[in-house]
Length: 216
Image (tube, rainbow, N blue to C red; front, side, top):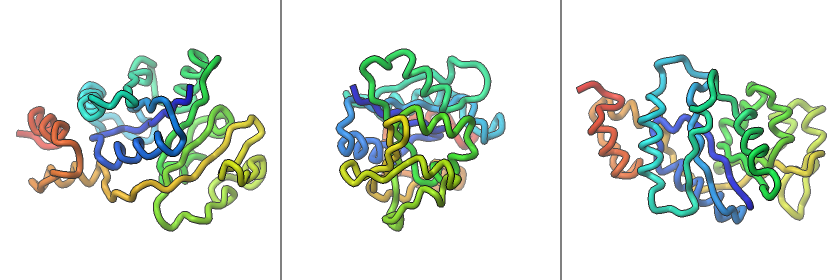
C-alpha cells in the first residue's frame, strides 16, 4: 500500500488543498490520501480555529465521491496538542507491515519544519512529498535544514528526490499553482465578498448555513 497523509487545519478546506492532493496522488501513484485535520495545532491559540466538528464536516463533504480520498480523526482522539510526528508513528504502528507512507506538505510549511516537534525523527520515519510552486526549481536542503542533518540526505537522480539514511526520501514536486488560502477566504466572508469558485459549492453552502467565520 502507498498512502499519503495530508495534514493541516483545513479551516476551511478549499480547491488548493483538493487539487494539490489529486496531483500528488497521481505523481506518486498512491492508493489513498488521508486528510488529517489538526485538532489543537501547537502554532495556533485556542479560539483561533473553527471547531474540529465543523472542519471535519467540510472535509467529508468536499471529498465525498472520491474513492481515493479519506478522512481521519486521529488527532482529535488524542489528548493535548496535535503533533505530526505522533500521527505518523500511530499510522505506521497500525499499518507498517505493508505500508509505504508519504507525508504531504506545502512548500511554505516545509520551510518551517525545523520548528516542529521532533522534526529530525519525523523526517526519518517516512517519505516527505513537498508541494512546490514556480520558483522552487533548484531546491537546496541545506537552505531549509541544518547542514549536518541535510548532509544525511543525498540526491538520487533515479527518483528525483533526496534519499535519507532510513531509505525514505524527501521529494519536491510542482503542483498547479492556485493562489488560494483559508485565511483569505475567511477575510472575504467577513467582508461580504464572494468566495464562489475558491472552494466546493457544498462547502461554501455549509459555511453560510452554519454562520462560520461571520456571525449572523
